[in-house]
Image (cartoon, rainbow, N blue to C red):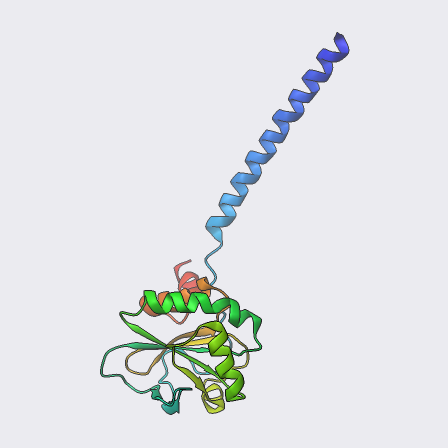
Length: 197
């Protein structure tokens, strides 16, 4: 009986110790969660600066419709330019979020997808990804004007053609961080949180 009683006491002490350790870890996770700010779209050092006028370019989408990117818009709407590629796996995983954001933000923003390369491959990409109805531009010059070096890359232009937010967008959160940065009037959420700290 003595060995059984001692083993029960040791086991209960071990259980209580483990419970205390788990509570301490949960507390530390909460502290870390408060300290870590949400990550926005990754800003690249090169390219147009936020707040600069975007280059005005006349481009045509795969359907032949003309779009004037970077020009002031009389309708007061912003434009999200999203640079994608049929060979980019991250782009393909981001497209459902883009379609959802296009629907959710339709009151103030239009989406234009942009790429370069073979128009036939781009048409197949549009068909397989269900992108019908979203303007899809094939233009190397557009990518060069915005100095796109990695994909998926997004640029948010306001109604005056001013670049309000830009960066690599790998998730819905990154995409929505561009909208939030525009709303807050900052270049990025990282800038906002570093200024608030």
